[in-house]
Amino acid sequence: TFHKSKGQHILKNPLLVDTIVQKSGIKTTDIVLEIGPGTGNLTKKLLDAGKKVIAVEVDPRMVLELHKRFQGTPSTRLTLYVIQGDVLKTELPYFDICVANIPYQISSPLTFKLLNHQPAFRCAIIMFQREFAMRLVAQPGDKLYCRLTVNTQLHSRISHLLKVGRNNFRPPPKVDSSVVRIEPRKPRIEVNQKEWDGFLRICFNRKNKTLGAIFRQKNVISLLENNYKTVQALKISQEGSLKETDTKVDFSDFTDFGDDQGMEMDDDRVDDDDEMDVEDGGADEVQSEFKDKVLGVLKEGDFEEKRSSKLSLQEFLYLLSLFNKAGIHFS
Ligand code: SAM
Image (cartoon, rainbow, N blue to C red):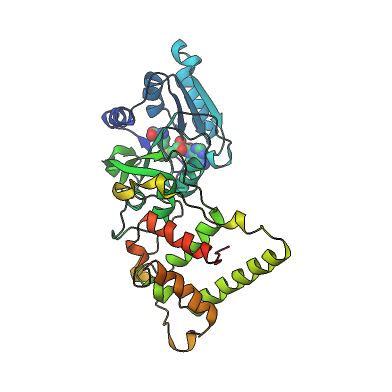
């Protein structure tokens, strides 16, 4: 019996397992991380391909099953290492490549955990729910382009490898799936995470509105003005403290963003059609010097008429650096 709550959908198509392992490009010297090995159908092929497999499985019954299945084989005794536990709460060991058919409920936190893992691995080949996968690989202008896309794209390049129908699993899940390849950027693009997150939340609050409309909203202006005053106050009391919060961007690092594929961490599944429209203008608008400052930044970068749904990663990074340069902060 399989646990629905643990997302237990076993891969039952051996050809598909072969294809996934082939496409992952495992080298014989690789340490492979597998998340949620279950009964070991994928694990077996990973053991054949790599030097060592480290598998993290939360369900003790499955761990038992794995031991039964592989302990007898002399070749695997030293090369399979099973960690029993919740992968989200486990400190991950060093690995070269991650290959996994994961429970979909942990897609978002797991992706972020992997992208923050150091030292960076070569790549991760992961089965996701189709829609989540399409959000990861979305490009500016695509319907599924969202905060998750931009957040994941900040730290990696993602490509779609394989469409997988629900009938390849036992029991079949309610949704179709896709296998994607995630390659961490090397070197990383360094941003202040809190700044970046606060900034993207505002930009994607209404992703189809112009940035001019978003940054005219009273609540946005007052939030930024508060941050601004705090930063200015700190600046006066301790010179130099500002530096840490600035977003410094070295543009030489991403001259090749043009063909980039999107990625993100936060599962932002709200469709724009479902969003409530907040009337802006009228009573919600305030005239102030600070507001002019904010709009001045948008004008400086020619962002006023642009929309988040169509902005590239490098445009987001550039806009945030302009705000920070003007002393405007998001955290
Ligand atoms: N890899 C196997 C396969 O492809 O046939 C099983 C995949 S099944 C979709 C997901 C597996 O992840 C299950 O064995 C489940 O027990 C395990 N799992 C669920 N939540 C987990 C967690 N938080 N940490 C580690 N493993 C987890």
